[in-house]
Amino acid sequence: MKRSVEMEKKREEERVKKAEMARLKAERARAYEEPEWAKVEDDVAEDVAEEEEEGVRKNELYCVACGKKFKSDKQWKNHEQSKKHKDKVAELREAFGEEDQDNDDDDEDDNNDNRGDADGFVSADEVEKLKEQFEGVEIQTEEKGDE
Picture 1 (cartoon, rainbow, N blue to C red):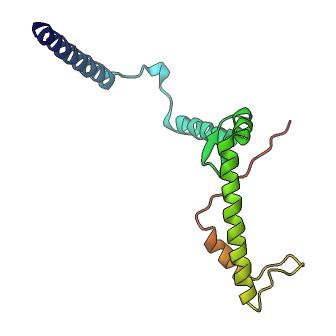
Picture 2 (picture 1 turned 90 degrees about the vertical axis):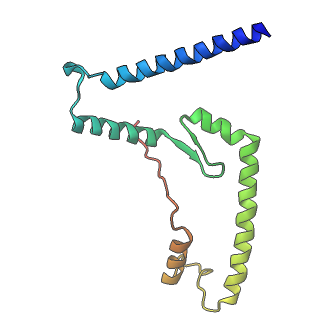
Picture 3 (picture 1 turned 180 degrees about the vertical axis):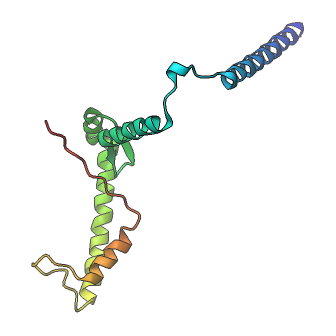
């Protein structure tokens, strides 16, 4: 019994000590002033941050099926070979297949639908429908550098 009381006292002392250390650390951080030689002009700092962000975006790979981001080709290739990814892709294909069947049934109902024409053109109504359907979807393109 006496031992547990002593342990509790030690734990409480440690908590108080940690809280005091955290308070001192925060106080030092608030009081810190950057030396003159290390200061960067705001506009230069913003430009550098924007360039770094763009560089990260260019090198970032994204799996739409799984909703995951990858920083390297090796990670991306490993992910493509994973069972979870293959299962998600199969699910998406099934979902899109069912959706296509539903759309085909709807198309048969529309007598003036030119979607099946071999000329490759779509009506303005079709374009509007597609815009509504994909509203909010962001398309990312991969830029290829000179190698």
